[in-house]
Image 1 (cartoon, rainbow, N blue to C red):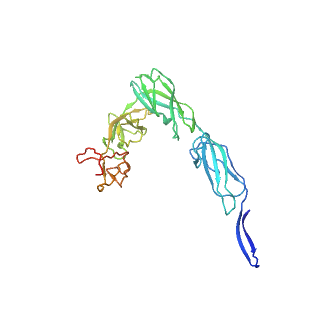
Image 2: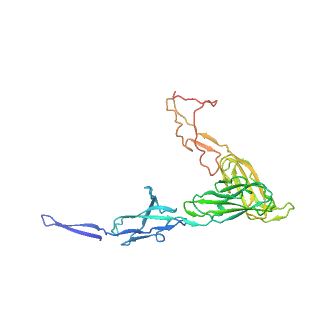
Image 3: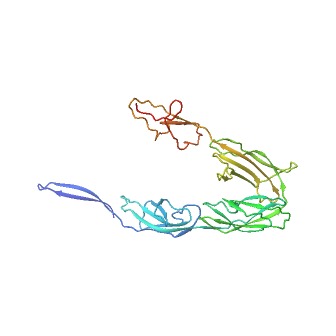
Amino acid sequence: PGIHVLKITTEDSAGNQSEVLETMHVYKDFSFSLDGASSIYDGQPIALGTDFEAVTSIPTGEINFSYSTINSEDKIKGLPTNAGDYFIYAEIAEDTEKCYKPQRTTMKYTIEPKEITPLDQTLFITKNLATNYKFDVSNMIANITGDTIYKIGFVSGSSIIANTPKMEGSILTIPVESVNSEEQIATIEIGFSNPNYIIKNAILTLVPTNKTVLQLTGITMPETGIYKGEKFAYSGTPVWSTEDGEKVEINDITILYESTDDAGYSSSEAPVNVGSYKVTVSINNTNSKYIGIASATFNITKKTVNVRVNDKIISVGDSIPSLVELKKDTDYSIEGLVSNDNSIGTLDFSYTDKNGKEVVPSNN
């Protein structure tokens, strides 16, 4: 195998000789396979040399990988990350200098979900106060990737819990009765479902306790304003104080921005898009000594922009310009867009007279 030069000598009837040089590639046969079976999900794509090996009978060049799920024929370039069953496809390209032809091989590979144990937590509720408590159950598990579904399991403590708790996303809302005894407790089982993890259930325990009410100062809540492509967030540093003005250092606070117009927004991140919102700053319910909450509502309203269509000059008898596929910057411009936006969605164009009445122009 290798590159060879073949010299061919010919002779005509007059005895004149000529030589022709031909380059020949003799290709090598070689074996190629992948060696691996499974690994545990770690948030990174599986890696050659770490999670599996490529075995070749001769030194070769770069190996290109793609993959598909077991139930799909759609190939994706690269190597998989998420838990699941896959086919791994590997290809070595032809090399005319080293004289080997392209080779392909396939391997079945499984990324196993990672097992994790969530943290049981205690929610301290204020004695003699009937109210709704909100608790973010995602705090019971570490920062994990993938979409997690949270479910409510068994609930005990009917003397404390007024009605059935509700789960929206990761936010658990618990309606609590007014309780005057610290001996009464309630428990709620929380279940977790995530394709990349096997997660055991966790227990949230509700414990009545005497809490000191703190007042919040030091921040400015967001006010109603026009959309600007940026977050509408509170500013300043939260300062918590007793009724007597004594400052208390609080590190465990919750910031929650929620839609008030059924848009479904709920996040610790301030909103950007148009809508009606409520922001709530509160001391975490897991704090056993203090309680404090402050909230405000605000709106993000639509920004006005101007669309200007470029003038066109045509002659009598020419075709009327089509308004179906006008191009931005070439046929029209938009004034007033914020820096992060390039368009405002679908635009409808029509011809009008000088009074703004829609007309159908003729070629005459």
